[in-house]
Image (cartoon, rainbow, N blue to C red; front, side):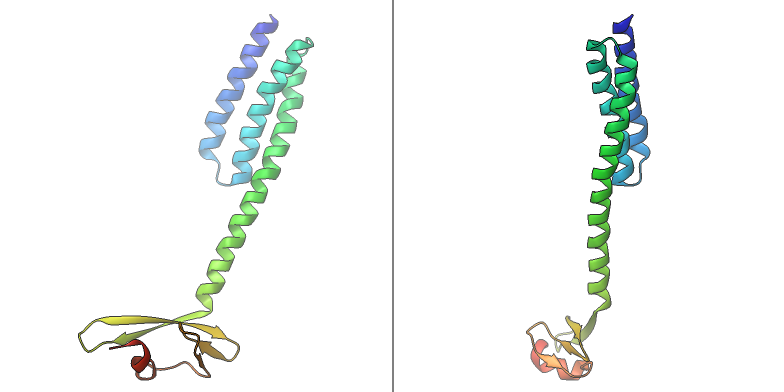
Length: 140
């Protein structure tokens, strides 16, 4: 009967991974689901060696779920930080279109710096430069 318990625990672990990992929205949720399933499976196998497959699955699932959540949560934090940095960069920049003599358009990205703007070549403007001011440098 103990082989039966181990088999059920492994089947349950695989089913949990399949069900939960597909519907998870965050890395923390995915990590917790995967950790729980893996921990339960490993715990059942280890517990089986001592005649306590059910207890092993429960303990392994709890430890694996907690560890998976912590690791996934750190991944979520890194992703959120990267997204915030990208948003800040977008908020601190301005695009100016320069209409060239051949009908094409050159786009110049200016970054806010203090009270002015810095151009792609490192030049500083104390105000938002107009297309006419940028055309001699970036247009043709």
